[in-house]
Length: 372
Image (tube, rainbow, N blue to C red; front, side, top):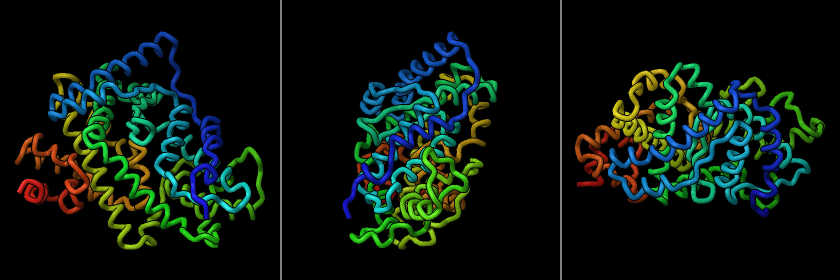
């Protein structure tokens, strides 16, 4: 079967559908909007220097500071996220054999992204072009108001976290391809590599009552909602109600080798998130006087903060498994206590230096393996 993302999903339809279902952001007048956008851009430019001061990753921080910064609304984030999915999928998605399947897949993805678009504050995306930082202005404003946070502090806090990710990927330019490779292996496994397409239409899962721009009959929905569309539903966990709860479907059917690959990828995600948390803590009140209150409030919102973490979590479908790997900050602190940030920076040298799932819980084991 020919492979390629062009025919697998109608990506443009996904972006249009998402734009049609996104909720409006909080009200703000034009001067307020201009001030918000200006503050976010300024914070994004300032943040990498703070990251460099803490980590010593000066060259990577300089590259991150020169990166693209896009302050977007929810519809534009959804369109950008569709591009991210497209780039992450690469050549792993099969061309569907059922007429209309690509549009149905785009419909599902669009609904999911429209729902997710209200949850994301910022996202560093290393998978499109040379990387880009997306800051979702209405969401930043909404949470800022909910927390009654100082605007300048909150904007820098958001940008510090996301620009730490930008520095990570700048320090480890191989990392994006490494993570994408795992995702694509799983996609190929789940969607099959057979040439006769006999598995098209299996494991169908289409959101009940999903509105389509062009109605389709039940038989078409079942078939088009098969392998690819069903997987999209499991990845995004989206329903019309917006409840992102998915059982551990993939964990039950993946071969052991791929379960181990994904578990290792979740450990890497834990490292990335934990490293960002530690950096923010070390920057601390000297740059963000109200950082403690912001962090305490935000801990309750962190489970699905980034798109890449969301994808990996949906692939595993195991909240309990994810909880094991929320110790990334403890790992980073444990390594830092033994070998400092300079020693920790070895983690960005290559895939072999990444911590294993067991090492996330045992920083000393990583130090022994990598530094001897």
